[in-house]
Length: 281
Ligand SMILES: C[S@@+](CC[C@H](N)C(=O)[O-])C[C@H]1O[C@@H](n2cnc3c(N)ncnc32)[C@H](O)[C@@H]1O
Image 1 (cartoon, rainbow, N blue to C red):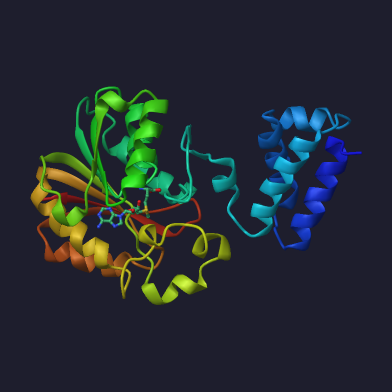
Image 2: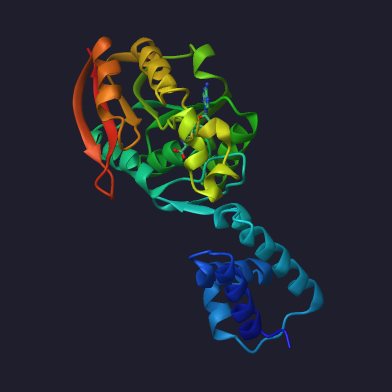
């Protein structure tokens, strides 16, 4: 019989056999999505039986996970900072390490009531939406080269009642010249082209290449964004960048060629260099 209990055991076993480390919790999540019930419900109603169409739906989800599709894409959701974001394979899945950017913005602008922020490469919108969710009077502009990403970021802004404070533009950083900002934030694509193929299968096969690839040396976007920021920032405006764990000195070199003062470099939860803060002179 297709009881929740049996289905959980079967699903977990199949995922385990496909080397999915999080087989147990993933199975529970997929079943909760199938039945549109909470995980708590799943765990406390293990005698309930699934009908044919529920079983079919569950097996479809399971098959996707078995083939290494990230659970966030199958669930169409990812929690970041304090909010839930809609995600699909048109946007990078928000990473806990990127919360360092949010944390630093909030602490650097603790006493500022009103600032305008530009988010370059907004993806799901997780950075700008999390920041504006914490500060009632901040305003945001968010750009991304991907139209599909912009649509998802707009949807997330609407879900969190922030549409009236964020303007979205489908634009490459190269062609964006609008406005002057107190703060620019960016988590750009920063993986070297030659290293892409060594990423986990979940990432390489499913996340948008446009969100990952930073050119031959991984620094292409830092060069563009730092140059662009020196034009779009107000005097004494700040630039806050997410960087790869091994990119600190290379990115600082680029910053030092422009007219910026480096305030600090911060580490993420895993103690890797992750976030550079600098001020336009
Ligand atoms: C690493 S993802 C970051 C997404 C999101 N900000 C986050 O932190 O999860 C980089 C984003 O930059 C966008 N992007 C790539 N090239 C771009 C360009 N030339 N101009 C603007 N955005 C670009 C990608 O589409 C992607 O959404």
